[in-house]
Length: 353
Ligand SMILES: Cc1ncc(COP(=O)(O)O)c(C=O)c1O
Image 1 (cartoon, rainbow, N blue to C red):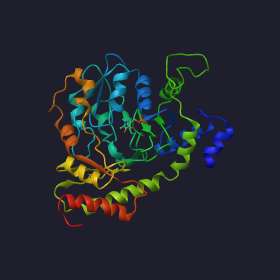
Image 2 (cartoon, rainbow, N blue to C red):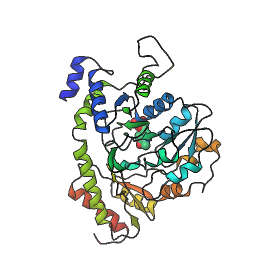
Image 3 (cartoon, rainbow, N blue to C red):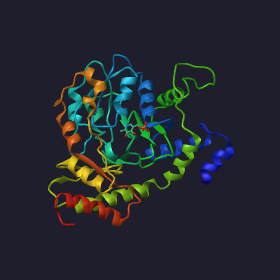
Image 4 (cartoon, helix red, strand yellow):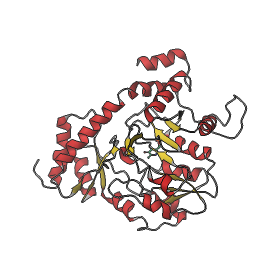
C-alpha cells in the first residue's frame, strides 16, 4: 500500500520512475543489459516481432502447446506460425523438430518456457546459427538452466526474452503488465520506441508503433512483490515435491518432470493422468481448483484452420492436451490444503489416503 500511495502522491501514472526501477530490477534478475516494460506479455511478444522486422511473408517456428498469445502475436504482425511438436516429458518445444521445419522464409524461433521450466535454449543457436530467438518466458521469470556449465536465467540468452505480469504468474501485478529483456542496445532502443507509438521524441514518429506502456501503479506493486519472488517460487517447488511423493505410487498419474539442468519456478503443477476429464469432474465436485492448460493445441484452433494442420499432425501436443491437469501449487497453500488435494486425487483412483 505504501508503494501504491507513493505513486498516487507522485501523480506519475504511466512509465516514470517506478517503471524505470522495475526495469532495472528485472534486468538484474534476468542478467540482461536492457529491460523494457510494456502493457502485457502479449504485447511483449508483439513488440519483439516488430523490433525484429518480422511481418508479412515470414514464418516463425513455435510450439502449439502454449497460451494462445504466443501464436496470436505472430499472426497479428502478419507472419505465419509454423508449429512443431513438443518433447513429451517437459511439454517444451522439441528442438529436433525445429530444424526440420526451417524454410527460406523462417525468420525466428519462439521457444516457450512452459509451466516455469526453461526450454532447451542452448540448442537453437547451434541448430540455426544467426536466427533470432524470442524466448516466451511469460510463465518463467526467475527460472534457471545450466548451459555450458553456467547458470543462465530465463530471458538471458535469447535475442529477446518476454515476461508477463498477469496476476496468476509467479510475479503477478494487480492487472496487466509485461516486459522484454535483451542484451542488444539497438533492439532495446527499438522496443522503447515501439511501445510509445514509434517515437522516442514526443510527437515525432519514426515508425508506427503502439500504446503499450506499463502503468506506474503496476510497476510499484511488482517491485514490492519482486522481493518475495524467489521465496515464493521455492514454496512452489516444495509444494510440487510434496505432491510428487504423494502420487509416486499411483500408476495412473505421471508427475511433472524437471530436467536436471533446470530450476523450475513451478508456475503450474501439471500432471498427466488417465481419465483426466473424470478426475477433473471429481475435483470440481470437491471444490478443488484445477485447470487444463491447454485443452486444444494451437495448430487445431479454428482460427488457424487455414494453415491446414490435421488432427494427428503433432501427436505429442495432442496427447498432452488430452492428459494434462494442473493442480493448485501457489505458495500460500497450507499442508492440510495440500493433503486435501492429494486425498481427493488418490481417492478418485481408489488409492488410500
Ligand atoms: C506462454 C504465455 N505467453 C504469453 C502470455 C501472454 O501474457 P499476457 O496475459 O500478460 O498478455 C501468457 C500469459 O498469459 C503465457 O502464459
